[in-house]
Length: 555
Image 1 (cartoon, rainbow, N blue to C red):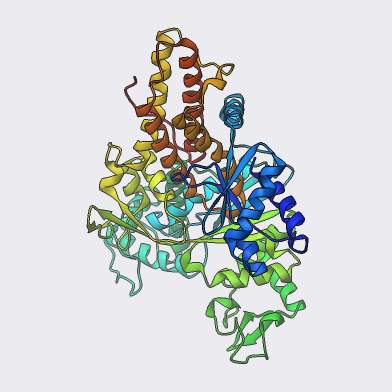
Image 2 (cartoon, rainbow, N blue to C red; image 1 turned 135 degrees about the vertical axis):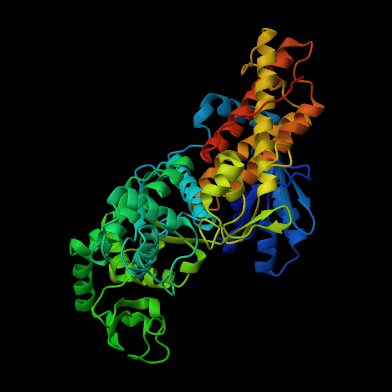
């Protein structure tokens, strides 16, 4: 219907203002507080273009639209919005579509035949995943599910940077704790990793590798630690509902020669510049003059690809990794990083052009940090991790459903204050409980109806004409469009917010409408609407990886 309204508006504009037939305007679901189904800003846009009062343009458009008679009526709301109301038959048909589609409602073939690869989490390999990194996990996973729901074939991938300075620091810290465990003299490294976690790893190493390791055996100790940390972190990710299709290790890119090969290619393309004894990534398109002060990347230490000692940097391996991504003929490549990687984005975008990949098909999404609170009090860093709160600690304390829902309900470009007390609350103050309760209430109504030998009836949907009934159907109908929108905008925080709004609309319907009445046909039509609500709530929760479970009473 939205598309039909949009086409009708364009036809009306062409008749009234043929020179402006190509203007861009929106048609959206109308706000809940007005008596309309859809609303458009077309007259506002056109009025500005024509230098006319939007209200006058809106009245002229209204007349043309109502003359055309396309299954809706048009009204004007000042200062110039067009409001549209459609017949109840439209919403009854929409409910029928929801009931027919069931668990597949919201899915589409809009992107059928397209492929996407999505990299997310890619945590530091030297310790437990912290709550900040964990935010990228559910966010990336839901993006993958949304893309799949619209027809994409998705490759989930993880980049494991298991070499470099952080691994060297891991080794130095581990050696100190290993020496402490085996009675040897050692000094804690000046920049060593804090916390008790690596002490635990050292104890495990003593049990596995024995007490006789020497400094020359440090590589063996580091290999053991990286493997142990890797397994623990991937168990956490699995517990968060995340499993990857492909895992690329930085060490393998180097030992296979792929990193050196791509560096050679970049030299041939003349996009590397020597400065201070190192090689820097600096495409000509970013440089005003060689080595000049306006050179975008030559002022950024992270643009170094080969250090002055000849050692490739992490960015060099990341270039090799992205070269493979861009060459893999995927229609969409998505990277999901913490906001501290913001300086990495322009360099990766520049790589697209260097390797001939369309930057429009490469998305880098950055998420902000998470602060853990207990009520009004900020939770201090973990004694075990030393510098941050681990994701495992939060998961074990609040449980899967609350952790996922609360991490997802804030836009990624906004910091999160994750409240442990709210996450553990089992009342409707907790957003996930509020949504699950609505699903459970629908299930309870259906269970009670089954005991009364009443069944939802699609054949009797024409009975549904009341304000609360139509309002609920209208809200259900928004779900399919939301999923399609998110496959392009990636603003997955809109899913939990939509589900909370739907829950409120359903609870209002439940309070104001007697579902199980003395009239069998009326009851069975309303039961069909309850099934529709239950279906969309379940579909949305499952898209987030959350089971729609809870207890409730019915009437």
